[in-house]
Image 1 (cartoon, helix red, strand yellow):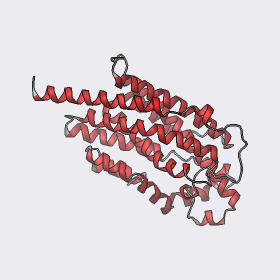
Image 2 (tube, rainbow, N blue to C red):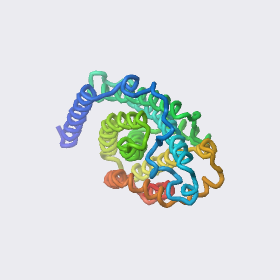
Image 3 (cartoon, rainbow, N blue to C red):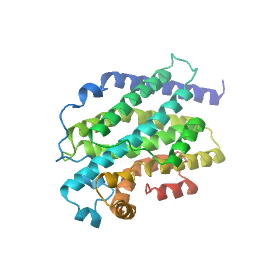
Image 4 (spheres, rainbow, N blue to C red):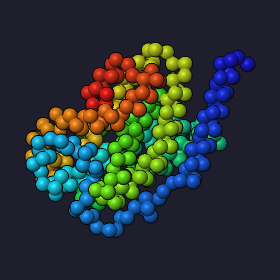
Length: 303
C-alpha cells in the first residue's frame, strides 16, 4: 500500500467519524419549528425584524429622518427579504448535496448526514417562509439574472466549488443571526427562528468546511484558481440579492433615495466585512482567495 493510499484511507476514516459526530449532535439538539416558534401571537409593531444596526440604511441621513415606526417596518421588511433569499439558496444547496451523494453508499455516515442536512434545510425553508409571511412581507425574490445564474450553478457546480459556496452563504447569514437572536428589540418569534437556524447551521458549516478541504486535496493551481473565482462570483450574487430594492417601497420610503444612500452606506459595508473575517481566513488557508476572487469579494463588501 502506498503512502497516498494510507493517507486516503485515513481521510475517509476521519470523514466518517466527523459525520457520526454530526449525526449524534443532530439527534441530541435539533428543533421542530412548527412547535418551537410562536406562530400564533400576533406581530407586535413595536418590534424590529433585525437588529437596527444591521439595516442597510442605519447610520445614513435618511435613517435619521425616519420615524421609529418606519425604522422598525424597514427592518421587518429587510428580515423578510433575507429569509426569502435564504430559501432561494437553500433550494440550490439541497439539489447540490443530493446530486453529490446520488447512488453512493447509504451505509456511509456521510451519506446519512447529507440526507439529514437536506431535511434540516427543508424545515428551515418552511420556517423562513412562515416567518416572512408573519412579518407582513410579500414574496421577495432575487433579480432575474441571479435566478438564472443560480439555476446554472446548482446544475454545474461540483466538489469544492459547491461546498465552499454553501459555506459562504451560511457564514454570512450566521453572524447576522447571532446578533439578531440576542437582541430584545427584535420580535421574539424572529429571535427563535434565528436561534434554530444558528444552532443547526453550525453543523452544516462544519461539514462544508471539511468537504471543501477534502475535495481540494491534490487539486492543482489552475483548478484552485478556477473554483476560487466561481465561489467568489456565487458569493457576490448571494450577498447583493439579500435585501431586495422593493423593501424600501414596502416600508413607505422613497426607493431611489433609499437605494442611493444604502449603496453608499459605509456602516453597513463595515458590518458585512467584519462578519466575514473568519470566512476569508478559511478561504485563504484553502487557497481559494485569489486576486480575481478578491475583486468580487470587495465588490460585495465582504473584504
